[in-house]
Image 1: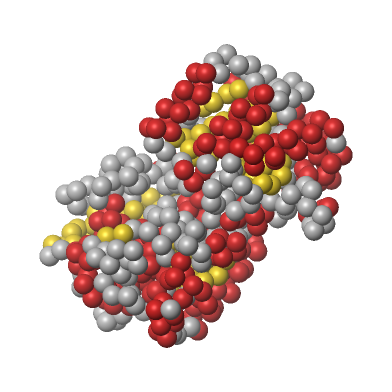
Image 2 (image 1 turned 90 degrees about the vertical axis):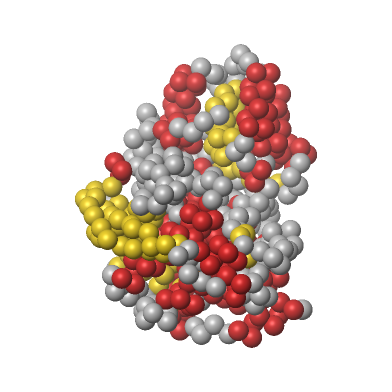
Length: 507
């Protein structure tokens, strides 16, 4: 099968969050399974070019369109390991992808609409005939309407479109004129059965367009598929999700187990196997890594449970609950290491103040930045790992933590609920219990979980060891997910999208 991913991110060369990890991990596994896989990305000026090989111009004269103007583009080709990757470089007066960031511009809508149109123009002009075009989140959701309402009439050949929703909160709301800029009649899409935003009829919703016009839609965990059907989780699109639920499937993400492997991790001073047979080795080497981390960060954790947290400090990740976890941990003679990237100045100020209030505390480190090498060491050194998200479409943190023998402490939402099973849940077999869970997103919920963490760590070493064993026994590789996607692709090839589903929206 010939698969083309059109995306705004791909790890490790252009990554903001989990979307980049998914595109890379899934594409790599699909290629292992014998598929022909290609990735199309913007040629950002901040790409990690050292991760690419054989970078060269594939086409120097591709013209694309914006408003009534023809825009010249250079298409580059490179190898990301064994994955063929095309990079679109527009010679645009607005320097769309030469700004030192991936997202965050006031014209992000224009930037990614242009990229999506140009990606399809490249496929069309190169006479490529993909079996599946796989698009990701709002930045490339417009590909589906473009294919159906522009490129099909030009004779472009494709067989199916699959759209993955990584995060429902970001939808790409825009005006009809934005679509007109790239060759569609924008007003034609401002209708109930197409892309009209349910909450603001004057706007279009790009994410809705991906749902309506794709053959199949996936979410990044089964639980998240159910959550986005609700007013609480659907971010205004719950009626649309319910109407199209027959073609929406939840597929749990995987992690790149070659990159996240404590036995071969170059960032760890004391490697160890991620294998339940070697629990004593895991405990011993984790203790050595803990000592190395504490020395590096100039804190203490001798004999204390070390709680780790590596996250973006944004509303979704519940930074106020992370604060409560820090307070409770220190009050109960534990140690805490936070490596967090603030999403805005207000959150940065909050944690700067917290850091100052605990200045000199021997059991706390707060780093408000990101460091890849340090993040690996925190996973390897931590006893527990806290993920208190308000919502979590999938989450990779808990999977990485378990692979590194750190016991997850997670709120039961989205993919966290699909992967972390409580140590005291008698409905789950003992060998399936992997962590500590809590329901309510408040101080009481966090303290309920941490109290049990500390009691188990200090008083029930056999139970703690069983949680580590169960966690490292989990298979979070992309193997299972890639096979499930393959089934979805085959269904997409066979599917004729029934417009009758739209009638359900009126109910």
